[in-house]
Image (cartoon, rainbow, N blue to C red; front, side):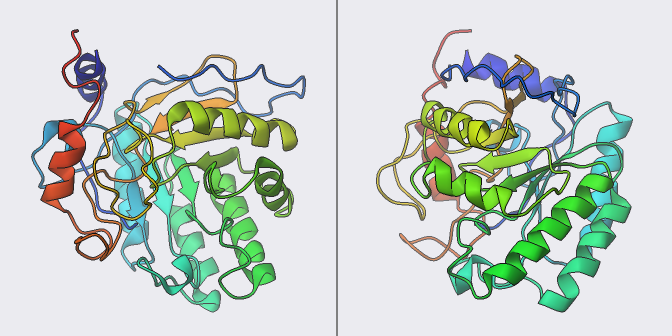
Length: 308
């Protein structure tokens, strides 16, 4: 069944791959709060190009990561224009907040002074209504990477600017093993009104779809019904206690948009499966294609040999 789903999705989209850094349980019924944003209805998620040739990895739609490079606005314009022309939904990740990753494997990011103008350049380049995951780990690491007030201000401003440009923004809030739902909700609410559609969970992590959905439903309840997306790129057989280049893991649910009346908007491959988390466990630098772990993820795909 997994192969059939991936093949069907690939038939709706463009090409494959990108570069980057670092059967689910039903969700609860939505609250009675009116949803101010239309539900996502288009089933086609756009892909970008990659030199890698494992079709189960790169033939499946996944996100384009924008990490502070000067060419990012051009990438946004090209990616979103191509998707819009083909009636598809582009997937973007903004990952350039100052003191990114607290100086760890994916260290870097822009300066406080340059971040806002860079984001404005991205916003000016948006065509259509792409899905955009904003700053993986930034809220979850809020108290660990310098000035929390400055980081919150930058995140809120970026969410507002990109939302105003038409992007459907999901602010990353970590995963179910990192923050309790109350703390995750509190950090989201602390940003104030930003226009963001919701939040992203499990980015680059391995928590199962069932666990992630249950946790996100509780965060949604505590934030008056914010919508959310789940990264399923490497969660096919759940976590093993390691977060950096965990071995023996598997590809997760194929990415798809969801329009079932719940707060779940999409299952996405935000992390590019097959790219290293960093120089740990024998891996290359973060964002580098690592054939060994790519082959492992594909070999352990729980749906690979299922009929259909």
